[in-house]
Length: 394
Image 1 (cartoon, one colour):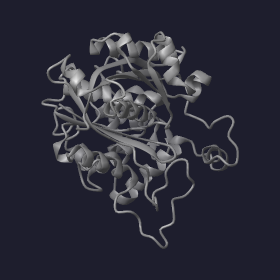
Image 2: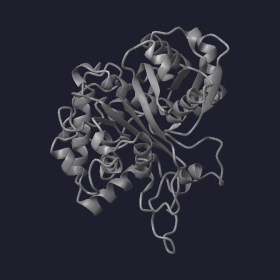
Image 3: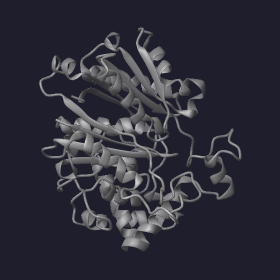
């Protein structure tokens, strides 16, 4: 009863082009419309994922993309949730369709990024934790990634070679992806030979920043079945917050909630995202064929294996080293190449994950195709307790 269809997907290739984000979004949107076999005039809602790097147009992205495509009277929505912005925009589209407010929605996210790692908002002050963490702690994003990697080493005996193997795997996956920025095989030795960014993570363990865009067409199942006999279904999308006490430090916080009086929750924040989505979809990790997880760093990909329930805590390295998460393995993870091959284009990332899952479930992924793909999950996390898990099936 809660299913909607992903009828069309489209992307602008990711890289560093130095052009306006609107141009990228328009390309992705037109590609998604063409893939869905519909006209722009058929769209009844435009749900944009915001970027703060696009000036005022980036903060009203739904209106911006509707204008760029040519005003057609559609409803609009603009969402910002850091790296989960694309998921929030998809969720808005889904809600409109399920509420009967529209049959056809277009979701678009696009970004133009600066050189180097992301910095704080320029207009932040001492009341803004994200502004403060850069100035009081010097804690850029890779600093947090490094701390999580140190945690895996201390708790589970992970090694730098394990982390490097994640990068090597994803580089093989993304090699033939036409939308990926980095299309080159990288070996474990090359990762380990690259400079430390935040020990134990090397430069090639950490994703870059990129320009890029992604778009999807979300429709009612009834509408989709008039276009195709076997549409990809969006079965669940969770966007729940952490539960007090949040016992692991999450960006941009300096410390976790106290567990002096109340013990930690049974399910941590990231794991709760996947758990909620499984519950909504009536599925479980045993049903998965493919996963797209948020590999901001190689070590974080290993954390996500455990968070989505495909192995127990401390077993992610074995899963990786046994080839389970390779294309050809039992459960391929990041067949797109992940952020390792794409880089971060923040509002487009979660949408791009849905594009990849849809492509896999249609068996349209070419050399990176996962055999017999039927159910996929995409997970990501943003600052300030944002995150999402999306389950697609066919």
